[in-house]
Length: 161
Image 1 (cartoon, helix red, strand yellow):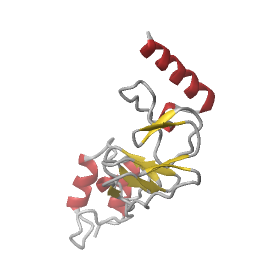
Image 2 (cartoon, rainbow, N blue to C red; image 1 turned 180 degrees about the vertical axis):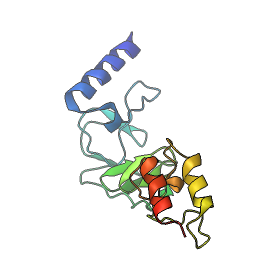
Image 3 (tube, rainbow, N blue to C red; image 1 turned 120 degrees about the vertical axis):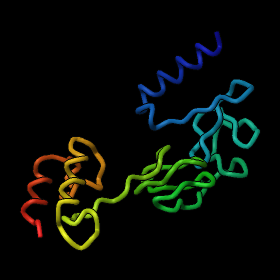
């Protein structure tokens, strides 16, 4: 019964204050939600093993002033909770250009017609694009528009050496 109540409260909180992606709520063994490290405490929650109703939950416990998290390394996996732009990554997440995510960051697309890197725009580049048609594999997207399509094939053909 209490579990259903907590789920209902969480659901109502998400509707009232934002999307489910914004909130990471962990319920402690006592049933009290865990505080989000680095965040202001606005309701009863557990921070570093103790229950609080105000202040800020920082690594090492509750304090009256805002805490400062270490800055995440961009494009890398966080070893501990850290600040990634305006987001807070948990250990194991990746900081990708100011946003935390579970998987690795997508590689940056580089506009080039020589997709194979052999110094020539040739049949190998044409095959690379053709074999990736319709996918989101950026290694076959010479114009970096996010879609591998007929425009990419034409780009390779027009620059064929």
